[in-house]
Image 1 (cartoon, rainbow, N blue to C red):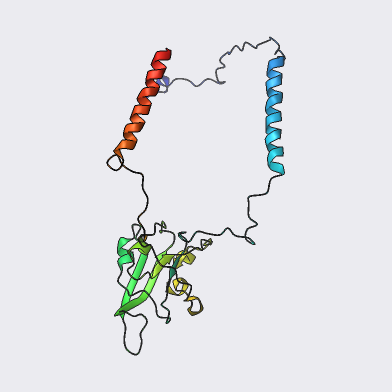
Image 2: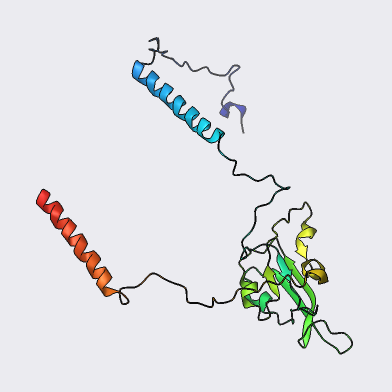
Length: 224
């Protein structure tokens, strides 16, 4: 291909002229109304600051002071024991089946007369929970027929090592000295829960509400 077919490159880049029209009109000072609004906003902000300055603090001196948790708080899991010290887990595997995030791994083994770990025929020889995958939904606690696994009040699990979030049986099992600190899992309440009545339960109540609303609409129509 001949060199004449190429467009020659200019020695200097082309400069395009850009005209900038500067606003030479000086800025006017803010009016008295705008100045008053700015001052009033500052006064409101300082008033809110002074209002909260002398109030009792609502924060806690963590970690020296910790907030008390509810009895149904879903924290780190715990494997509980019976009163005689044996494990409550019988290795049924329902917690691993019902787990929506597949965070529980369990291997069951048979109990023997010489080596009895639980009251059932089997026990959990290997029990692991991946806390990075766990969503703390409480399904494992609800599905467990022995109330063996619960979500306890402890929530402090920060670590810089991913391996620390794999909780094995030794970390989850309650020590023997704390076996009496038993809390049952998710169970149905003994008394029926009071719910909002439906129209079939109290039809006269909803009829009275409808008549009252119609009378209010009639008064507004007459005013107009």
